[in-house]
Length: 444
Image (cartoon, rainbow, N blue to C red; front, side):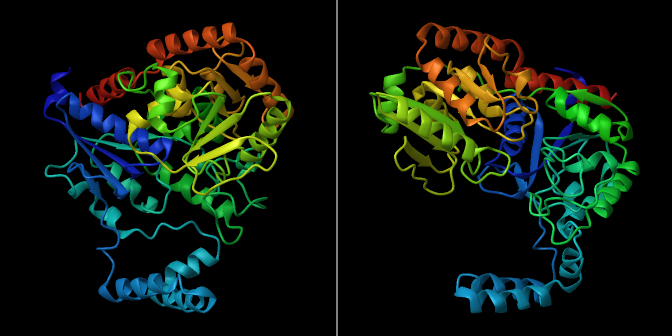
C-alpha cells in the first residue's frame, strides 16, 4: 500500500448505505478500505446500518425548528386519506415556500442544507473526496464547486443524470445531445413537475464547469455518454473503473442446499431477477420478463418459479410461472444463496450501466440471460459466458431462457466462463486497488 494513503482520510458520499447498486458500490468500497486499515468514511443522505463510520448528512437538522415542525405535521397527515394529504400539501408549502415554488416550475430539488457540513462530518478533514450518485434527494449540487476545491475530488457516475435535464437514464431519448427541453417524459426518475429540463441541464453544466474534479465510470458505455455530452471534457482526468464483487462471499454453492435454506422448491426450474424495485423499476423491464415467463410456462412440462429479489410488492402471474417476490435483502451471504439456488439469472432491462447483479450471478456460477443494453455487453459476451437478447423482445427472451434450460452443457460452459471472467476483471479487490492507486496519485 502507498505510504501516502496510510494516514489519509477518505470520504465517500452516496445517497444511502443500502439498497441500490450504486449505493452498494460505495458501501462495499468503504468496507474494503476498512479491511485494509484505511481511515475510510461514508457520508449518506439516508443511514440504515450501524457502522459508526457511516455518517448521515444532517439535512433536517440544518432546517429551522419551524420548518421541521411543519414538515413533521405534514408527514403525520399523509396516511389519513385524501383530506389528510391535502392538508399535508398545504403544510409542506408553508414549510418550504421557495423550495416548492422552484419545484413547481420544474427545477430539480437541491434544497439540502446539510451539504454545507459535509467536509466537517469526519474527525479530521478528508484528504480525498469520492462522490457517487448526487441525485437521490440529499445533496445540494450548487455547493459542489466550493466543496471540491478543498481536496482532490473524484465523481463516479452510475447513470447519466449529470448529462440530462432530470432523468437518470434517457433510454431512447436523444435530447440530452442538444440541451434537453421539450422533454418527452417528465415523470421518469428523477421526475420534475414542469419542463425546465433545458434549464436544469444548463445549471448542471455550469456547476461542473466551475468544479475541479476527476471523473470515473464503471463502464465504457457510460464514459462514451459522458464524452458525447461534453461532461467528460469538464473533468481534469477520466478513468473507467469497473464495478467488482466480493468473491469470498459470492461463490458457487450447492444448488439444493441453497434452495432448502431459502425455502424454495428443490424440484423444478428456478429463475432469478434481482434489482431494487424489480417489478416497478422504470429502468428494468418487468413487462417483457412477465410476458416471457408466460410463454415459458405455457411450453414447459415442469414448474417454473421466478424469484424477484428486491421487489417492493407482490406479483401474480395468472396462468404462468410461480412468482416469489422477495423484499430487499441486505445480507450479502443470503443474496449469494439466491444466485446459487437459481438455474438461470435473467436480467431484463431498458437501461443499465454495469450491473453488480450480473457480476454476482457469474461469481456464483449461475448462467446469465440479459438484455443487450448499456454496459451489459461489457460483461456478457453472447454465447461465450451468457446470452444477450434484444431489449423489449419477450419472444427472444423466452426462447433464450428455454434454450439454456434445455442445454446442460451450455449452462456449465457459461458458468465456467462467467466465473473466470469475474475473477480476472470484476473483483472488489481489483476495483478497490484501482481507486486507491488513483487516490495515491492525487495525494502526490
